[in-house]
Image 1 (tube, one colour):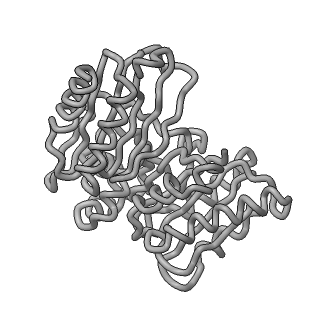
Image 2 (tube, rainbow, N blue to C red; image 1 turned 180 degrees about the vertical axis):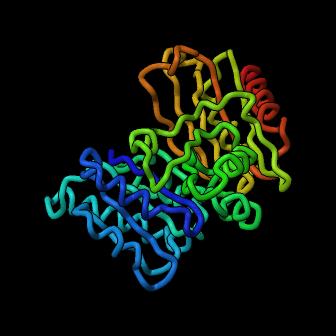
Image 3 (spheres, rainbow, N blue to C red; image 1 turned 135 degrees about the vertical axis):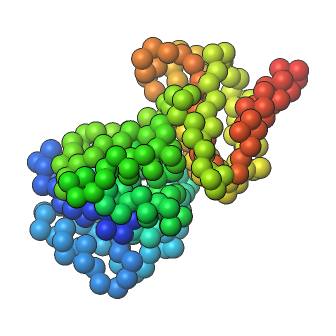
Length: 314
């Protein structure tokens, strides 16, 4: 499985600067990059071309508009060339989105296109927020807010020029459980930046937003029956639909309590579950976070309890 990380952030947040620094690191020299620009001139391609990495440039439009075909096709063509020895044997793919992109359709493609999910695995979503104008951008632009709400971690850029503390506070107002760092010109360890997304979010990380966007955390000590979990995720995706921006978590299944199941969903699409070899930190309990808009705070937990009762009765 080829790991894929998505790098997003609003216009001018510093995504290309970050990637240039990452690609200059010898330990990350075996990376492939898919770059998208909003417009016809592939400026990012020129900026990144100084590296010797595999580079595929998608400049036909906004990736979030074309992702249902272009991203999957690009990934598979790159993988074909990799298998045929036509390009270096890269170990990972980094997808840089347009600054105006909503990441959700990109995640859809990575989680639903049959050939892609057979060969690639979404590892993490990294969002960059500008310390100079980031707070105002998050207030004014819904795309920027969704970039933060769908992130696994956030990098605050240009802290030497702006108010990094204010930018971080704005980020945590949208998703308080995020791992956040600040760095000048992308000077951050790639190992931290692109580490697998941590589905574990503490209860105190629940955040509410004025637009009805917030996170809901479900924690359970008792294991969950596999059938109940399946029915719950299907019902949640069906009823919440577009309101469910993202779901991620670790689940203790009654049928397999010794190792955690990793669950992911974006809007109405549920990703096939994966397994970890052992429980992080040794805590064998279910921890799920839902990031949504307009979802009643107690609805997911009550829905799960109702479905568990029905399964138990049957």
